[in-house]
Image (cartoon, rainbow, N blue to C red):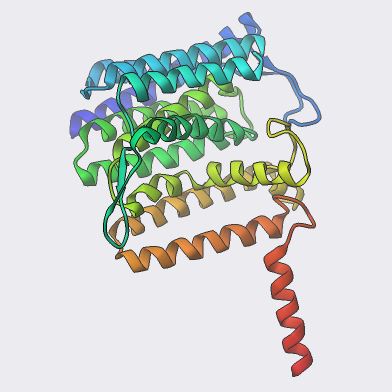
Amino acid sequence: MLYLWMTLLICFACSVVLTPIVKKLAFVVGATDKPNYRKVHQKVMPRLGGLAIYISFLIGYSILRPWNEDWMYILLGSLIIVIIGVLDDIYELPAKIKFLGQLIAAFIVVVIGGVQVTFINLPFGGELHFGILSIPISIIWIVGITNAINLIDGLDGLAAGVSAIALITISGMAIIMGDWFVSSVGLIMLGSTLGFLLYNFHPAKIFMGDTGALFLGYMISVLALLGFKNVTFISFVIPVLILGVPISDTFFAIIRRIVKKQPLSAPDKSHLHHCLLRLGYSHRQTVLIIYGMSALFGLIAIILSQAAVWVSMIILAVVLLALELVAEKIGLVDSNYRPILKIVRVIRYAGGKQN
């Protein structure tokens, strides 16, 4: 275990050293992010920072050499993801090309490597086998989480911090479960991400770009799939909770675009961090609030893993209700989208009239 923590520190140090080098490289190759109406930053920024995370991860992996029968396919998929990310950071690839690259990486891990969720044990007895659907479900999970992390990468330090919190939770639970591979890779990723975060927290000196966001999303999705596959229904929900912030932000973005009759791929300024900024919170306060939300989701996931089934169901119901209320309160879907709050207002009004 000491060797594992030493490797984490080495990855952290490598990331700290490599990030300024990658920053210079980003300007040389033209991997820069120019400000526009949708973006918060006001000057041209280098955006290849994820390359420092990836190289630090490879260094840590070569030192620790955690073994899993699927390790080669996981690393191959990560290489494809990083290549797509680097090319996008430099040339701004079409969305279809990026999506194709993600599908190829997910296909390699799921179909060739066999990393799949094939069944879950239902809460009140019995098993639900996915059969042939296990392949598309697993691919959708990887591609979905990969893009969810990418979508929240809108403020300095946001995606890196949320990913670090998710990695802490996944690695901690893997240690409890005795899963050496997931805990080792998770902590290697954590050290690499935290080293980069020193330069990425507000005010950022470099962005991770698609190279970092796609790589982090891909690796987190695969680690969650490895750590929680073929388990109980509640355990199946745990990785969803761990990634509650990016998943819920993506979910409400889809709802928002359906309500407004916009294409699902249409960009906008109504994500969680945009809404918090509009409420008057500063850049740093917004990021810290979302960190707190991510940590809360992680804590709930850990509690859920130890709770009885009926307690877990109650917790899940409360979490879903709280999410909906927060989304309505801050206008995550639309300023006029407040179904539950309107019901509460009607009930209060009726109660007031009776009194």
